[in-house]
Image 1 (cartoon, rainbow, N blue to C red):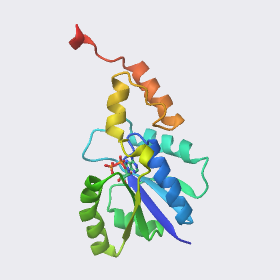
Image 2 (image 1 turned 180 degrees about the vertical axis):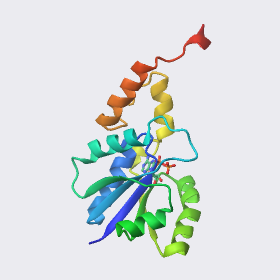
Image 3 (image 1 turned 30 degrees about the vertical axis):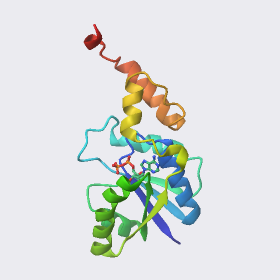
Image 4 (image 1 turned 60 degrees about the horizontal axis):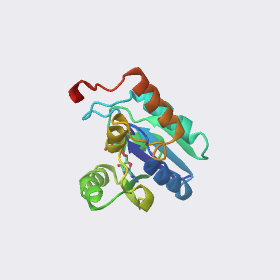
Length: 168
Ligand code: ADP
């Protein structure tokens, strides 16, 4: 059985992620979506929330499971899961520049291969950061994220109404 890992912080998961992960699941028997704790950014959603949104979304797909990445090396996670490859989506040359050293490091460390899938043209403008920004300013992101994510984004903004004091 061939397994691959799709790692990311998914804060939150969007349709560009979903499309690439779904295509990866056509190439592998099993795809593990590995949700990272995100040490370098302060996430909008907790790890548990990000995992729950991904689990809800991928419950409709066969052969895709969602797990926390944990605090260790991606190569160790892949070995523990029996995965032989990492799959990444590429929106453009900047993504490749960013991914290349990590992919080379992972291959150096353990022979782990990275496979790149070209992002679908409908989603190359999507990033979690931009979606959060647009949503926080009142833009409609409902066509950019899965339903499980949109619901939580909406709940979140109802909990914390935008601070409009700067507009006054
Ligand atoms: P990070 O690894 O910086 O936390 P994300 O969680 O946003 O990144 O994304 C995880 C992975 O999903 C990225 O490494 C990239 O391979 C892929 N990805 C991100 N955005 C898109 C998109 N719009 N289309 C296709 N793949 C994407």
